[in-house]
Length: 181
Length: 221
Ligand SMILES: [Zn+2]
Image (tube, rainbow over all chains, first blue to last red; front, top):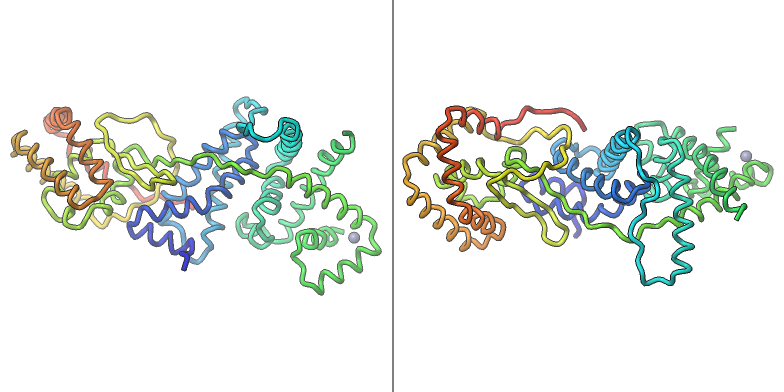
């Protein structure tokens, strides 16, 4: 039987340092996805993902078994993203940095795909932080409204309203652009 | 109005019970606003889905550049016999003078390594957890004091022999992490001894070392 996240946390705390590696492998893709979409910046996302796991590791003993590990992890992840954005707000960041593009795909569809992604990335980045995080958690992380509300410590109805408002704003940016093309 | 919005969100992401969904569909039939929203948002979701992330960059964790915070995690990784020997007390002192580094890589798992000189600054993370010390500050200080006294008694030759023996013992335990550390220790032994003498010449060593092992509990998360 596969260990639950909570069991792995316990094993790590009991001195099985390698057990933490399982948690990292299990969650790195989701955490990185969250960070990249929140920050819209490849290198920031990579650094922040490392920082998130370090923070988790160092605070593992503070994780209470009565909460879900994933909620706790997301909370830390969003905090780290928030801090990074705050730091970045004080600096000028090149917006255009993209991750390395694989060369094997045909150039044409690759370019098209990159353009699509770029539009989404910019549209999300332009959203207010509170709406962006709800959209990302719902659309890309596939969390329920209840889970989102737990993580953000807000009422479920607020989570839904934020999502609506976020989508409403995105519609103006993304669908308008799309029609114009 | 905003009740429409909430229900619409539930419907869009399939969080309604079959019955609630049916009731919302009844509403949809009569509400043009909701119809328009639903059509737009479905289109929007398709656009958002374009941004899928296939490649996750290599996440490498380097956990701490100083021996203090993760000393006890490291300590737990030692076999019990090593923890119980006086050699361990000496090893503890030696390692404290080094910059013990623990790193994590997906394929290799955790690695411990040590070097004599401080490494480049690593990103600081706020609010370190209170360590599960199990030893009081005085006990740690006493342990270190004993280790220093022991180290002072020993000649450089005897220290050499001891480290060789430790390395041999570790090898026989087939502990990859520890073998690596012992090898590093051996390699840098001469520098280490010079460093050790330096450190022992300074009366502030004990308290400095004690501080390394002892961290104030912090709050957060
Ligand atoms: Zn309606």
